[in-house]
Image (cartoon, rainbow over all chains, first blue to last red):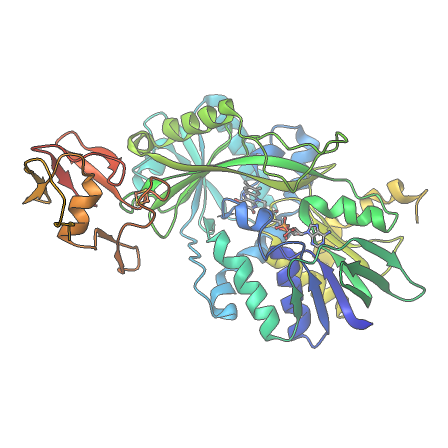
Length: 391
Length: 89
Ligand SMILES: Cc1cc2nc3c(=O)[nH]c(=O)nc-3n(C[C@H](O)[C@H](O)[C@H](O)COP(=O)(O)OP(=O)(O)OC[C@H]3O[C@@H](n4cnc5c(N)ncnc54)[C@H](O)[C@@H]3O)c2cc1C
Ligand code: FES
């Protein structure tokens, strides 16, 4: 039987980046991926690097906004991680960090922006408020209807198709073993360490990292653990290529919208519009099958894009797709060692394109014995009450 | 480029691509005319030459502009018509 220091389940951004950090630190790592590298959320996402508080944290009460603001320390680390990533991985990932605007169209939305920026500044994030004309001066593509925008100089985007592959290649180069088309079908705790199996191999490891995105709860269940991560299905769209003109990441504080221009010139439009998750015959959600598009989401997303940047109306939409990601019970990511199961690490939920490289680095650091207090706020410890009858 | 033996075509007509006058036969797509002119129909963001890819309407790499109205269409799905003016890029 093959043994490893660390077994990783899931070859998305988080799993591959964790494998890279651990392997370059000298650990023997084996990663098992059910399909291919990046075929989950990591290859389907919008590629936004967003460091302003997300809209979803601002419309569900003050308590959540306050809690989310405390993840700003992670965002600050992520900014540095992304600025260094292409050099560290030696890969062209089309990382652009020319700034991001979160726009407001109504007086009420401007108020939300003001409160958001005050929170961010208090947490050490250098966001500032621009009025409509100031915003249009740096982003002439914005509509005359934009009253104000929150501006972060660090926001931007990267090529989601390239990033996870680059982490996987770097991990393999550093000695990690990455197995594709190897869905993990069982997982159990041993007296010391863990044992997992796929169709043709059983492996043992001192530690286990569960980085399977929307499937995290399924693998945790194999270990008799509850993990409150739920699959959600989202819509993405791409227009035809057009001349370079949209330098920033553009988001909206009151409507679901994210917009950016790719290296090739397409405008990617998303922002969290729902799609419909597929269901298995037994009525449970099946994150493996492609979610169904919802026509109203497509229309709403395009309308938000055009109202924000009217030039988009002239472009042809060439593709729309749906993807599945994971959301936790309290919306914050879940990253860290499970208190009731030492050696078992979980990383899932949240905007883990932006924060994934940082989650991976900090988990590897903590496994290597150097504490990573920045992860405390996202630790699975806050859900331990769910496991008080498990184990 | 066109098959000539044992093929009967209707009379050709002319159209403009980037100001050049080119010839097409009824039933041909704009893509046919473009490929006869040059396999290169544009450039990628990194400067590499780019041609048609799927020739069946899926990849959208063949989008051209119908002038003067500026409508963007897929060359591989759109029939060439007499007197058309087409802009690349
Ligand atoms: C449409 C969309 C847009 C998004 N936009 C953004 C954005 O702009 N910015 C941002 O920061 N975040 C964004 N996200 C979220 C982001 O994509 C995810 O948080 C991130 O990719 C999660 O990475 P992961 O490695 O945790 O999960 P995943 O990439 O989902 O990887 C999990 C992997 O586990 C594998 N797996 C599952 N079960 C098993 C098993 N039994 N055995 C082995 N392997 C298994 C899966 O095949 C999959 O490859 C978006 C998500 C979606 C869907
Ligand atoms: S060549 Fe692919 S759509 Fe025309």
